[in-house]
Amino acid sequence: MTNVYDILKERGFIEQATHEDEIRQLLGKESVTFYIGFDPTADSLHVGHFIQVMVMMHMQRAGHRPIAVIGGGTALVGDPTGKTEMRKMLTREHIDKNAESFKEQFSKFIDFSEGKALLLNNADWLTNLNYIDFLREIGRHFSVNRMLTAECFKTRLERGLSFLEFNYMLMQSYDFLELYRKYNCKLQLGGSDQWSNILGGIDLVRRVEGASVYGLTFKLLTTSEGKKMGKTESGAVWLDPNKTSPYDFYQYWRNVDDRDVEKCLALLTFLPMDEVRRLGSLEGAEINKAKEVLAYEVTKLVHGEEEAKKAEKAAKALFGGKGDLENMPTTEISKDKIAEGMDILNLLIETGLTSSRGEGRRLIKQGGIYIENERVTDSNLIINESNFKDNKLIIRKGKKVYHMVKLV
Image: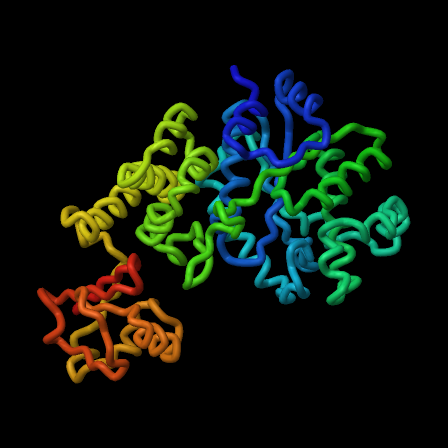
């Protein structure tokens, strides 16, 4: 069997490794327990997390044991990495609710049966720590001078770093120590922005237990221009179908930049690399075929084959004149509600295409709203039953966001 390290490297996942040769050798000779942490700061995973999920799936398929650590404890503090200001403080109840949503989503991708993987919450060990004991046993191993040179802190020092956040590295490092002691976890994985925190954990395990453990980081999902992927005008692209519909999810990948297609196929699908390279080399109008494959494969992984087929049909109905419009994102509105007319701004809010009347006015002024392919120029436009054909009305926002309104 091919060493999973080589698979991850060929597909473009790996950014940094603490000991490349040792890690590759370890993964080739035994089943390795590894972990990735996910702080539940929202009620769903998003596409940025999906890179880590894909790595866990590759590793598990190769016979290694994943530990998905939900950061119910670390989320109470908040990771300062990549943030220009302190994260919003969440209540424990809010974090616990988000953690439950994460658990449900992980089970779609990872096999947790018969000990093949573990799903843990670091609140179980972090929230019960005695502060004085923690400082004496763990804090003494950390050099403040060295911590201040870490990337995760450097960017915050000028604008202010709270002592609360300064503890985050210690807590994440303690996670690695706890997992090594209880589960013989030898490898921590994470996004490239977690490098400093991962090094902290490796050093702590070495100092306290005299053991060799390792770290690997993976490239963040970015566009060819260096911007984080997974952001749209309406916000993040979520894995929860109630937050980002399967159709909108499909459309996001269908519309990626031509230059990003091959990278996304390598990172976010299990297609063989020969096929990835073939699709990525297509040019001109042909690259759209590769984008359709990308959108279908990623949507299938996240939402299942049935939803992927529905999204594909809906997209073809809109852009190719064939397919099934019924699978387009849809809002049902009662005939009574629209009998006396509804102004376009309220209708946009009702469908979720805008979050406020002000946003709707701005889009209309910019020429970004269409009713049945007719541009809306009047923000006072009243919509009533006469605008509907067979009780259906299609609204378009920009070039690519479509939404159906049904009268019921």
